[in-house]
Amino acid sequence: MRNILIHSIVFHPDGVSTAYLYNDIALGFVNNGFGVSVLTTTPHYNFNKPINKTNGFQKKLFGIYYKSEYQGIKVFHIPQKKYKNSIKRLFSFFYWHTVALLIGLFLIRFDFILSPSPPLTIGIISIILGKIKRAKIVYNVQEIYPDLLINQRSLNSKFLIYILRKLECFVYDYSDAVVTIDSVFYNTIVSRFKRPNKLKIIPNFVDTEVYKPEKEYNGFIDKSNHNPNVLKVMYAGNIGHAQDWNTFIEVANEMKNCPVMFFIIGEGAKKEELLKEIKSRKLNNIKMFPYQKRELMSSINSFADVHVIFMESSIASQGFPSKVYSILACGKPIIASSTIDSPLISFLNEFNVGFLVTEENMTQKIKELKNSIKKYIDDRTLLITHSDNARNAIINKYSKTVVVQQYVKLLEEL
Picture 1: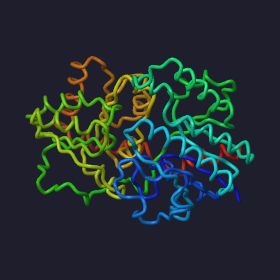
Picture 2 (picture 1 turned 45 degrees about the horizontal axis):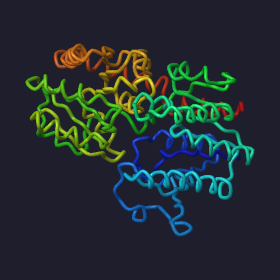
Picture 3 (picture 1 turned 90 degrees about the vertical axis):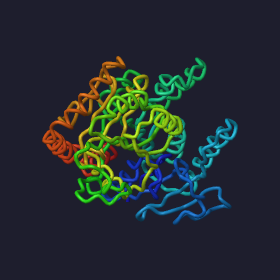
Picture 4 (picture 1 turned 135 degrees about the vertical axis):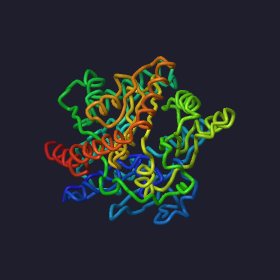
């Protein structure tokens, strides 16, 4: 049997992470005859329960690592926490990588390694493991680093940027293949390769059996208090720096007297600031809720009439919000605000599934977003058309079966 190690910080079997892609990739490989092991963190992002009280986790070597199973797949978890203290964060970072290397060397058998960016350092550990154990290495670029940090202005040191650029090229050069998710990412990084033929495009995907249109809403929002004539506009996901919350607030503020209700579901670094802004402006047309269980997301997506994604322009070209796939799979339109060169706009431009706003002038951007929402208010048949197009786009090109086969083919060619 061919064995693959999925080396990823975002794999959480109990569904506490916003990134479920690698959970589904793991199951896809199992269905194609691979033995799969996963090397990951303990749940630490938007996760409040103590790990030793989480169902299915077994403490190993006095808590140096934990083990669990995800639908028959062995998962090795290395403790990880979110620290505010920089020294503790740095120690946790090195601890995770060191233990990952040791577990990979002595506890797991594999022929292939699949690991995603970020962080770049996960690629370094995968390369070391691959070279020692003679396994083929596939590095998956989900976000472009260090570009994302530079454009977020989180990284200003020329020395650190130089080091990270060298690490990036090292990972590209010593991986057996590098996969990125679309042509925008491909064109951005292909010039950084000594051997450009290593770089492949394989899109992300969605499990169309999990995410699908649902007529009956079974979630946590009391729909009995909701006027059916009011358009339900939703943002569900991370409430962080990658989203343009100033624009969101201004659109909601200018549409106070329109038949539209905005829903925000999620957690993140900007949540408290956003709550204060909503309260100070008395924006009663915005309702906020915490993250919900994955099992509810299909129903929650279906509850909304339309979803919105507001990308911060400075980093829009370096990342792609994976929620796009699940929203479309549930047959829901998207109003997207991003830069014209972003992967989000490039992806959605293929399909007639909503409205795309690429204007960067704040006043004009707000005007276009308001007009897009009003079009749905005035013409409900447009919602139906865009909804049908959304589901069909995912089924035809981005289902789990279609995309996993591309990964399987890549591994067979290595």
